[in-house]
Image (cartoon, rainbow, N blue to C red; front, top):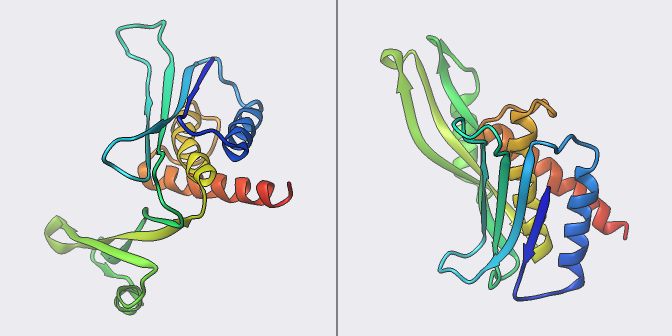
Length: 188
């Protein structure tokens, strides 16, 4: 596996989080992982983003490739939304008790963002998308977070973790990875 790290800025926190990610990953089978790129960006988008590319079916020699990008001018603290499980009002025709009250409470909180309302099967199942605001306090936390997300896709797809390979499932893995990193960092 090839690690490609490229930032215009350089500091001890970046080196520490990269080493943490590399050491953490050693407990998993990475033979199908060809490349991990963790790079800084000066694009017009702030924050961080990434992708996990699965092997191409037509080329059996290619493996997984992960790219994690963090905007180098991100200001801290940085706030971003994270997907959460939807809030169901009704499932298969059964009303979900307490959902309306929870919806109202979340709507009055600056910790939550409520998204689109959805309905299927003639209104038998209805829900609203839910997002939680997460605050990042440093550049290395952004690296840890996006690395956790993208490596989560790889580990779930190769059945090495029990998180579902959905955006909501992998967002939960990302949260857990970031919390592990924060705990490790506080002990250094």
